[in-house]
Image 1 (cartoon, rainbow, N blue to C red):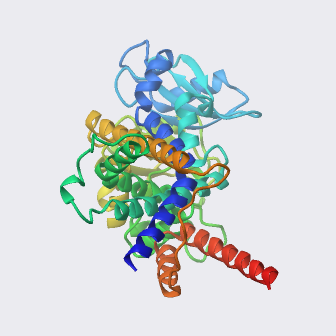
Image 2 (tube, one colour; image 1 turned 180 degrees about the vertical axis):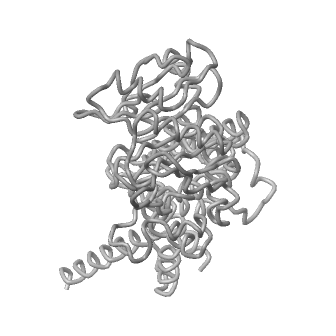
Length: 450
C-alpha cells in the first residue's frame, strides 16, 4: 500500500510539474523583474522619472491642466502625485484612438517630459505577462490554474522528499552523485529549502486571481465583514436605487485589494446643493487637492477624476507598508469629503491579504524583502530547469516517461477532488475534467476490446 501511495504521488508530481513548468518559469522571471520596478524604470527612463525643477509641487489641478493643454483631444482620467521630492507626477490619458498613455509632468512648473504606453515598457510587459500572460481574462485563469497546481506540486514534492530511512542526508547534498542523480539532488534540496517561500508566494498571489480572489475570497470576506469596511456597504444609492452599484475597481480600474469590491458613494444632486453636478475643471480638482491636504493625505496619492455626474473623485495611497493605506472620496463637484477610510478600518482578511501582497511584491522590508523574493524566484527557475532535465534524461525515446499508475480507491479520489474543489476551485474543476476524460477513454478502450 505504501509503495502504491508513493507511486501515485510521484505520478501526480510528474503531471503537475509538466503542466506548470512553462507557467512557473514565466511567473518567476516576470515576478523577479517587477520586484525591482522602480529601480528599472529609474534606470531606463531617468528623464521621465526625475523632476528637473526640484522639489516644488503645484496643485493637482494645475498639473492636470498642463496635460490637457498638451493633449487637447484626449481625456485625463487619473493623476499620481509625486511619491518623493524631486520625483515627477504621472497622469493617465485616454486618447480618442490608440492605447492609453502615461504622461510624466514636472510637478514644479507643469512641463511635459514625455509619455509611455505602459504595456510596451519592460516593467509594464512584466506586469501584464505576470498577471494574464498577455491573454486577458483567459490568461488570468491559466495563471490561477497553474498557481493552484503548483501548490499540489510543492505538497507532493515534500511527500516524495520525506526521509524514510537515513534522515541525516535529508538536508545535505550528496557530492558522490553523478548524471541524472546529481540533478535530482539539486532539485530535492532547492525544493525543500524554499518550499515555504514558494507556498507563501502562491498563497499571497491568489487573492488577485479573477476566480479564487474575485469570486470566492473577496465576496466571502466582505459578506462576513472581514473585507472592506462594513460602513461602505450602504454606498451606491442604497438598496432601493434603480442604478447599478459601481465598485472602485469597476470605475477606477485600480484599487487596493481590500476595497476593490467596495461600492462607490453615489451623490444625488439636490437644488441649491453642491455635490451631484460633475465638475472636472482645474478649480474643482484644486479644491479636491486642498481637501485631501486638509485631511493630511500625503503626496504620492492616486487621484481618479470622475466621468459621470454623481461619481466621486477618489484618492488613495498605496505605500510600501499597507498600514499607511488611506482612501478618500470627494463629491463630483469637488466640494465635500464623503469617505475617509484607512487600514485600521479593514476587516481581518483584508488586512492579512494587504500585508501578504506587500511582502509578495518585495515592498514591506525594502531591499531585504526584494532579495528574499528574488531568491525565491531564482529557486523556482532552478526547480523547473532541474525537473525538466531529469524528465528528459529518463524519458524513453518517443515516449512521455510518465510514472506507472497504480490502482487507487474511489474514496481517495473523492476526498482529493472535494478538497481541491473547496480550497482551489479551478484545480478541482480541472481534476474532474481529467478524471472524466480518463474514464471515457477507458470505457472506449474496453468497448473496442470487447
